[in-house]
Length: 160
Image 1: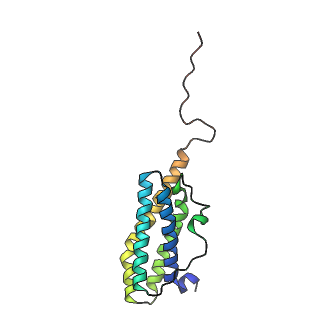
Image 2: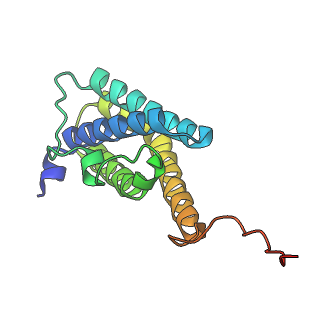
Image 3: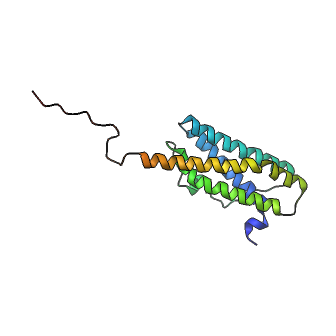
């Protein structure tokens, strides 16, 4: 058994906490209103799921690797918070895996009900994170190479 299987519920809570902290910081620093709204929604999904898990499992202790999500992606760039979305998307996949592992463990019906009630939102959150990652990748591909002007130069006119 891996650590995740042995304490899937604790890992799930830890992953949700890490994601929520990252998403709140990204939302606060996002310049683009759509990106800010996406991060705010993701943080809300995580907060709601965490609250349900804590209500269903008294004494729930989140487990983490001791490194924040923002540290994992090299820090949060305030100019482009969605740049960390690729790592966030992988993190969201881990959240889904832990949710499924926790649901499969024999536990109280309240915990299973809490996980089940949030599973669709957790799946959609993974999709949103992948879209943010894809958006950042597309923007990076469309950006002009370094050192080249972003606007066309005015044509030179011959001197009289």
